[in-house]
Structure formats: structure tokens, C-alpha cells
Amino acid sequence: MLHALLLLLLFPLCNGILPVQENEAREARQLNDLWTFVREPSNSIGYGLLHEWFRQDISSFSNATVMPVPSAFNDLQDNSLRDHVGWVWYQRTAFIPSRMSRGRTYIRLDSANYYAKVYVNTIEAGSHFGGHLPFEFDITQHIVFGNENRITVAINNTLSLQSLPQGDSKAIGYEDHVYQRGFMDFFPYSGLLRPARLLFLPKTHISSQSIVADATGTLTFSHSVIGTGFSKVEVTVTDADGEVEYTSDALNGTTKISKVELWWPRNMGKAYLYTLTVRLLSDSSSPIDIIRTKFGFRSITWDNSQILWNGRPFHCQGFGMHEEYDIRGRAFDAVMMTRDLNLFEWTGANCYRTSHYPYSEERMAENDRRGIAVIVETAAVAIRHYSEEIQNLHMDFIRGTIERDRNHPSVFMWSLANEPSSSLKEARPYFDPLVKLAKSLDPTRPITVVIAGGPTTDVVAELLDVICFNRYYGWYSNIGQLFRIEDDIYKEITAWNNKFSRPIIISEYGAEAIPGMHRDPPFAFTEEYQVEVLKEHHKAFDRLRNEKKLAGEMVWVFADFMTVQDTTRVVGNHKGVFTRQREPKMAAHLMRQRYTEKKRRRKDEL
Ligand SMILES: *[C@@H]1O[C@H](CO)[C@@H](O)[C@H](O)[C@H]1NC(C)=O
Ligand SMILES: *[C@@H]1O[C@H](CO)[C@@H](O)[C@H](O)[C@H]1NC(C)=O
Ligand SMILES: *[C@@H]1O[C@H](CO)[C@@H](O)[C@H](O)[C@H]1NC(C)=O
Image (cartoon, rainbow, N blue to C red):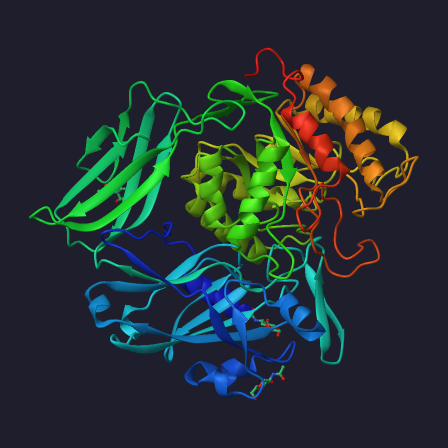
């Protein structure tokens, strides 16, 4: 562990990352296919590192097999792979044409859970800790151009107590049969979970970008560039029809666009996107680098009870989610993502939280296009021990998350953690600098932490702009007592309001329903019971919304998802309103009815 922390100090995680694009100046090569895969025994001492497996062709090992990328490795073979703790090895070759030597070559991994060391031929290109965020390394010096090059990624998926703010966990086991369980309620899927690519960029290129565009039409942009081989800059803003609205010859600038079309969440208006094009040009005006980014003009503000989108009350109605599916686990899959977002729209929802980690970049772009408002959550779930090491890592995760997602108009709030032990007094000095960091990186969006405790014991809520809390009346408390729910949740939300006078979102509520299990009168774990629990909450929500005491409501959870084996989980968590295969339970129809109904809205809402 010490080893990993030292590495972190030497190589800070965030030195800018841009979305991948292919254009006149940039090429990308997918490395998404079958890689050679070798597993070390669970909890090994890092045998592969000691024996420098990256120097060898590991496909010659008798236990070598293949692994698709992207995919979690856990659900593709047997128990020991599913519950593996420690090191696994991915390897492949890639032919890199000679012409690529004109520019710089990077390897980019969109997500490797949880710790990855990357080798190109026999040289370590870099390492990354934490998962769920992209990272890239300049490998130009390590490549033999016009040749096959060996790429090796060693992944360690250990969630040890001191290592990650992602659910304290422990390895439990007998001799070499070890498995790990975190306090987080989801399966710790591991491997190369999102696309892997080689990027071929010009020697001089844009390396980071910040775009802030508000409802007054004010646009502020800034860029960093690696290399000095350019003499001119051309910045252009075009509208959705390609009409030029603005041009500039500076990398950083601010301007005001007149008669701007705003970006609205899906049931408030159009999700209107502009394009910012940045060109680095040579003396003779030939293009050296180009990036094009879609962005939207909108302002998020808040008062003592509501979130305002472009000055209008925005009532968030949606779901907590998981980005995970059968067999492939927490891997990016365009088919499943599309099904998810289409179903999401079918329910009429307008908002979700990327519980409990940043979601794929492809999904973030879709949120912008579809007008889905999103709370992006850092990978920090169920923190129970507060230490400086975890705090430093947590800060890196916050930097990485904001750097990656800040230019998306759909993102309206940052959630710094889910359900930390926020009644412990150490929580306050732990979170105080995290909130300040997030504010300094992005002063334009509200900050939240999703709280599990109540308003009397919590010590973190005071630091936040918006209070999100999770509560399970009728499930974890007073199961079976449907008649108490409306009163209990009404009283609690009122108590949060009275104490803190700021917008309150109930970010989780709900109950488990085993798909196809029915009973009348409703009984815990049936589809009928889930529906009744939700309905009782809705009675209170409607009253609270009219009294301007509730800024949003999110059911836990969109779809069933996998957890570790536990007496309280029947092959995973079944609080989904959809099954894990994304078919509707009775509750999905209830939510659709609620979220598509206009009559509940107050007059001042759109
Ligand atoms: C797979 O083979 C390598 C090389 O022989 C060995 O070091 C490693 O322990 C094996 N993995 C397992 C899970 O036994
Ligand atoms: C990698 O895994 C082992 C267990 O197999 C663990 O003891 C070690 O701390 C991990 N190392 C890093 C750098 O994460
Ligand atoms: C533009 O802004 C970036 C990011 O704030 C900064 O690093 C860079 O120095 C600025 N460039 C110029 C030319 O002012």
C-alpha cells in the first residue's frame, strides 16, 4: 500500500484529460477485443511483478486464457475468478505504423478497477489508482514504430481497508480461498471496464479544456497546450445549424453571445447544444491540432429550498442507478446503455445520480444530447474511517471527476460521497477541505454529499449547498408498516428543512421486489409491496413540493443489480423498478405514471 501512495505523490493523477476524438489532426485505435489473460492466485505477493511478466509473452503460460475488453472478468468463468482478490494480467500486441512517429502516441484506458500498472514493451508507462476514471500515458518513447508492440496491463483489484474511499473492506477467507467484501452494497467488479485505445496526437496538442457557459449567454473558455509548435489559434462557436456565432484568436477568453438558446432538462425545454471548435494553426495556417466540443448555455442556482435551472424551479424526478449488467458486470456496453437511457426516458424521469462512481464518458455525452440532468458522484462510498491518506486519494478522485465532466451541461451537481459515517465528529474536518476543493475547481455548481444519518446527528450537511439524503421508511425501518410512511417521511424532510434551510433531495427511497413475486394484501419482497411503499412516499412528496420543501425525489433504484453474497440479498439487490435484464416490474409503471403526469407541477414550474 505504501508503495501505491508513494507513486501517487510522484505522479499526481490529474494532468488534464480530454474526451477522445478522431478528426483531421487526431487518430484513435481501438484496443477493444480479446486480450490474453492470466490470473495470479488470490492474495499473491505480486508474483508477476517480481518475475517481470511484462517482459514475457504470457500467452505461453499453461493457464493463459482470453478476456474481452471492455468487460469485468468476474462473471465469465468460475467462483475463483468471480471472487478473485489481487493481481490479474492483460496482454496483447498492437502494430503501430511508422507514419505515427510524426506525432505523439498515448495509451488511454477509460477505466481499470482498481489499480493498474501499464507496460509498453519492457517499460512501465505509468500506473493509476481508483478505477472509474480515464487515464492516459505518453508512450512515444517506448514504441518501436513500424512494428508489433507488446502492451501489458497488470491490475490489482484489492479493496483493502486503507486503500480506497470506496467501501472499507476486508479480505475474508480460508487459506488461499479469499474473497473481499466492502461495506458498499454492490459487487466490486474488476478488470478493464471501459474502452482501451491508442491515441495518435500531433506533437503540439491541446491537453485540457474548460468551458463555462451560463444563461446570460456569457461564455468563458480556457485551454492548455502541450508543445509550442503553433503560431495561431482559431476558436469558433457554432450553433446547432452550424451558423458561426463567435470567433476568437485566443486560447483563453470570455464573450457574450446574444440571443442565446439555452440548454434545458428534458421536460423543461430543449437540450440545445453549441459546438466550440479550437484550431492550432501553423504560420501558413495549416491545422496542427483541432478539437470540437459540444456544450450548452445554462445556469444552476439555488435558494433556501429549491434548485433553479436557468432561473426556473427545477424539480428533480428520477433514480439512483448502477452502470452494470448481466455477465459483463460494470463494463461499458453501448447496447445496455442505450436500453437504459431509452427506458429512463420512457418513465418520464428527468434526473439521475451516477451512484456510486463516475459513469462512462459515452453516457455523459448522451445525457447532454437527451437533456437528462445528472448528479455526478465521486467514487467514495460508505467511508467509515477518516485518515489523511484516504482524504488525499479522495481529493484526487474529486479532481479527476471534475476535470473529466465539468464541460457537460447536463451535470448540475457534484456529489462528493455516498453515505459516509457523517455522525462521527471526524467527518467534519475530513469533508471541509473536500468541499472547498470542489468549490475552487468548480464555483458554478452546487456540492452535495449523500447522507445516511438524520438531521440531529449529522455533522456534514452544514457544509453543503444541497442536502441529499437516503431513507428507507417501510423497509429498513418499520418494514410492513405502510401506514406510517407518509407521516414519517413528511416529518423528516420538514426537520431537515427547518434545521438547514436549503434545497433537500431525497436521493434514495424504496423497497425490494423479487421480480414476479406477488401477494395481496401486499407483503415485503413482492411487487405489490414495492408499489405501495413508493405510493406512500409520493403522498408526502406531493405535499412537500407544494410547500416548497422538496427539491427532488429519486427512487432507489432504476434496475436490480449484483451485490456480494449476503443473507439480505437474493442474488443481488432487487430494489429496481426494472429487473436486471431491464424489464419493467409493477413499480416501473407507477413511476412512469408519476413522472409523466403534468398536473402535479406548481404554477411557477415550467
Ligand atoms: C498461472 O500461471 C503462472 C505461470 O506459471 C503462475 O505463476 C500462476 O500462479 C498461475 N495462476 C494461478 C491462479 O494458479
Ligand atoms: C495488491 O494486492 C495485494 C493482495 O493480492 C495487496 O496485499 C496489495 O496491497 C495490493 N497492492 C497495491 C499496490 O494495491
Ligand atoms: C489559459 O488557461 C489555462 C488554464 O487556466 C492556463 O494554464 C494557461 O496558461 C492560459 N493560457 C494563456 C495563453 O493565457
